[in-house]
Length: 382
Image (tube, rainbow, N blue to C red; front, side, top):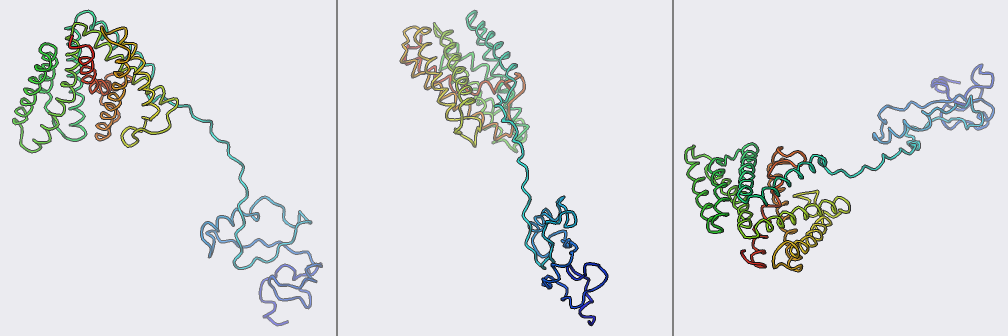
């Protein structure tokens, strides 16, 4: 035979049984060898030279080839005589299928989390409730002071976050003085006194900011006017409720309905909530939670109007509870909108388990004028 017949490396099926040299008349090396010699010889298994990155195939095919049977802990033909002999591998072999992977155990389902320290939240809530109820039924003037303190702290939290996150400098001094004066004026002089105090506070904010450079004046005073309306002016309606003869009971009904609404929304939403109410504003709120807030508040409203408010009836309580649930939810969403714009989770850290004062006033502030107005319509000024 000439060199062209023997120059290539010996392939499977080209050696005799004694392995002493080439068999006369053997066919050329390659996959198409003589079947007669294939039956009389003991072929040597050939492991193909698989490129690391799949050769001409893409990376996924290369990966599949590397994980094929040739690289598993399987016996070669020498240890397993019943196995079929390996033939020469074509130039572009098909990728071997991946071996089935054992099913991975799924992690146990996670229990729903409340998202806050419930123990601290309940403890702080009970403590605040005791202070509020004690001041409400002992001396009305003390409760007016509680409202004023809450307003000042809330203004401090809001202006601080505006400056930290947006660089907006809403003047705290005129806001704090004007806010406290607004609450006292609303209690002493009613709606007229509240509006006059609001106008004077707005003027003070405009003048106070003039002591600084004009850059940013418009955004600073706009934020100041917003803060004056959002916190102290809305809180003034609580003081106006308190001014009635049965004012303590009116304020208590207002607080009960707002708290019950929030509790119903939390309990039902946490247990059954699936459909998001406003995912872009507050992803945690659900439609089921809103229905829970409405149901809880309407029941509480019917009981409170029937047994706590003179001349009140249960059907008035149903309507009052419905409106409170809606206004409290909108107030919570409004506060969430502000915090999302500022890029923060809580307005402060003063109340463990709750956040800051503003995080507790979010549903109370917009609900106060609604309850004041409906009580005036239902049972009069008092």
